[in-house]
Image 1 (spheres, rainbow, N blue to C red):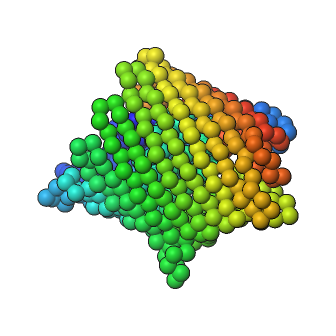
Image 2 (spheres, one colour; image 1 turned 180 degrees about the vertical axis):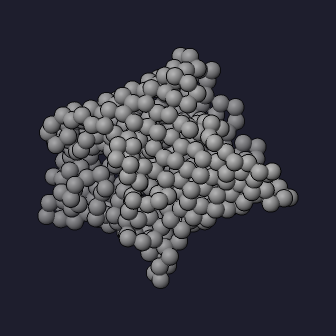
Image 3 (cartoon, helix red, strand yellow; image 1 turned 30 degrees about the vertical axis):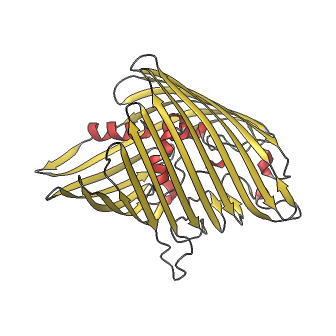
Length: 380
């Protein structure tokens, strides 16, 4: 099960609630705070206080009203924030999610508003970034969004009920502009669960991500004419262990920017980027020594093809991550995690040649970078 979902579920159970008849409003949230060490950030080591590297700190309100006949009205308003300075995610009141909809035990849910797309709901929980480790295990530049970097505005999502182990989701996010296809998104995913087996496939495509308005705006990882993600993953739960494999393919058309890198990576020397593709192959593992103590590991190999008017480059990334967590109670845990990244393959003459991770203090001055984090998280 996705550890982020576990946290949110525990938070909901532990939260303060106001309940009248079949109606409810629930306050819930999570705090994740720690100290990070980065081996190389711009040529120097660095220590930082950082909020939300395992799971972004947030609080939310969700509610449900019984409409009768097996139908309910539902809503969620969720705000991400930085514990260290109190700033909201993106400066928005509800930067994580804000939606309202109708659900039925027989027919599923229809949700309207700012939301995660189906690939995040069904594929990301099968990856290390979305499953157990967060930022330190993210695929380079979170190119497939498995680390929950961005959400979509103006979304209409349908979630089916689970039948014989199968369920599906589909979503369309409007551009809300006169150019109908300018910064719009569509996505679909399906999952299957049976005993210890969980598997999912997903697809997402967005046009002109990173514009000032539309489906994907300020939190976009790439600025480009288009982005397409194709994902597949599975894991299997044994008695005390969970083993998983995930694959994703990301294609970015006519790219002009990358949120993880400085402007020096925007274009190659003497030329212009025409397309970026990333293929991520990941193995992940978690073992429960006791119900309160577990440890996990993950390894990802990412092969890229970066096409430019001056030629094609094939850098690759190796990312190895470890984590251990101990629960002090049902709502509070301590954890330590670390990650090592090495960039190999072709040199591009840009910041693509240097290791970088969102949990780090900055881009490395070379191809290697290590991160260690010791932290506490608490759900409410």
